[in-house]
Amino acid sequence: MNMKFANLKGYLLAAGAAAAYGTNPAFAIPLYEQGMNPNSVLLFRYMMGIPLLALVMAVRKMSFKLTREEVGLTAILGVLMALSSLTLFESYNHMNAGIASTLLFVYPIMVAVMMIFFFHEKFKFTIALCLLLMCAGLMLLMKPQGGQSLSAFGCLLVMMSALTYALYIIFVNVSKTVKAIPTTRLLFYVLCWGCLLFLTMISMGNEVTLPAVGSGWIYLIALAIIPTVLSLACTTRAIQLIGSTPTAILGALEPVSAVILSVTVLGQSITMRDILGGILILLATTIVIGDKSVDKLILHVRKMFPKIHH
Image (cartoon, rainbow, N blue to C red; front, side, top):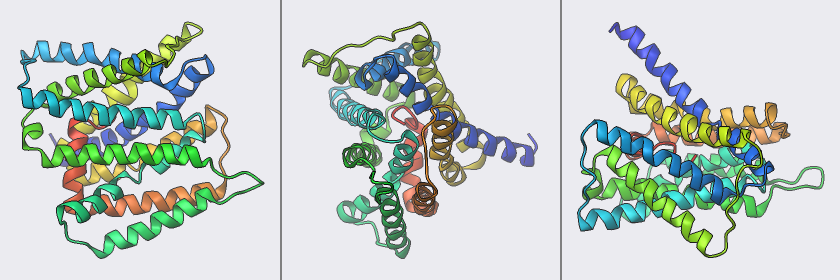
């Protein structure tokens, strides 16, 4: 394949993966309007992903067997991913979905900071700069306008989502056992454990809700395919063609896509200050991802489980 064509294809695939991820709110919020709650939406989304992965494993003749240690580790990862998904999707009920998707992008900075404090990574000037940019962006987003401020509870939910995903990334990076598990098998069991968590919440009184009309099932299928399977495939192929850093940086298009769809499809409003705050957060994130040491962590996980929760 011609190198220039391969590079162009890689950039287009990376951009496509980011855009596909950004469709999450466009599919989830109409389901909320039909009476579904986030726990039910994610339960059906995860359940639809499991047979797809099982089929891939069967075709590839992959074993479903796990060791006792792997069972425990995949359970931890499954709970982290499910909590990250649930808190993000719940935040859509409390704030503009596009802004929520932008705030979520602080997770690479969380990864960098935790690696410095807990795993003795070297502190760099770029990390301090990114923290300042991120704080400035958050202040712009949080500042009241017209008598209304951004929902503090919504912001807390997004920060919890970012934190649990950052913990997921670090866990995958530091565990040699997890690294040795084939990607598809790991994804399969992470989804299974996530489903168990959602079912546990139902047993504790969280109501099971279904789409009110037939179009709701289309939205659920779209959630399972576009921001999950399609985004996963595009991200993996893009990394193979252009490498991890360009793919990660183009991931900054993810919240941009979510903002555009929130405004055009969902009719949600956004101010110039919101846009400026989002730009500062994305700039900080891009700088962090451009750092090789952090890039290796984040992109290793993007290959394994990039888009299920976003």
